[in-house]
Length: 406
Image 1 (cartoon, rainbow, N blue to C red):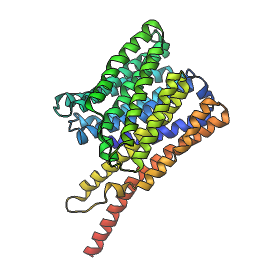
Image 2: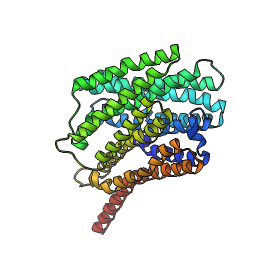
Image 3: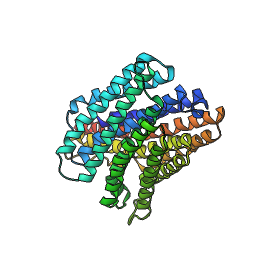
Image 4: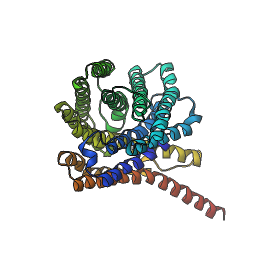
């Protein structure tokens, strides 16, 4: 089930690139352009959302020992979420009221279903309290984001009235910080020591950061809705994002035995981009912060995780298919480092994205769109290679068995 979400992620990334190619710099000049809103949600729901859903469903039982309930609903969850995301993107881009209304129902339903499948197990578990607390905060942040987003879709469709501008800022802040960044911070506590050879942040430091999110984000959101001032939200997002990126980069730089590889380098690049996005937001340049954060930093961090998870799932399924006593290719053979490096190198041209924001022009925006397509095509090729190598191994083994029997 997690793989369904992860394999959808590159296709959404390529869709984002095609939107840039088709609509050009109009998408980068104003955050309120309908096509811009559609592009943002291709990244936040299609790319980041699928990555987060898949990572949570795989990570909780495999690394945190948490029971995920209702796995039989997995296909429904995948369908609800991606159908709702597609309807929202289409509704925003074309101003289709029906699509907006349907998305306003389907997306909160999918987030509530994910919370229902995972939160009871998190609350019932007893070990790794800080890890479980991070997941609970992230999932609650996801639900809040979805509910606020539903209100906005109903407002855009003309069914509700309210402070749309302020609510949009609150919705975006909860989605980026309360959902995605908190989840990355939580997962990093296991991923970085296990795969990158780093230490972990002291429990007190990470607890203080998480408490700052839990207290600071609602206060800044309330201030934005009541006073109309977005300084508080920018301060909370910028400071907490910068602190997290700087802390994780410090861990990488002071690793006693760093495991140098594509995951380490990919996360380092993503964290540098996240730090730059946070500083841009503190400087007051929201469009540049969005290009760096939503277009480069967060997608790169989750893409690196997703490639590792897809390879691990492929290895598990190959074991199940072949049965005991059969030596199957390891995770590194199913997805070699060279494929991961190719996917990372394909992300280098994404630097065109912030350049297109700073110096908007149709040609530069379309070049940035082509760079986005290239980056996610590289991720898709790496993920697709896992299944191809597994099928090749099974076919060669079956052929060998037939020859021996003959």
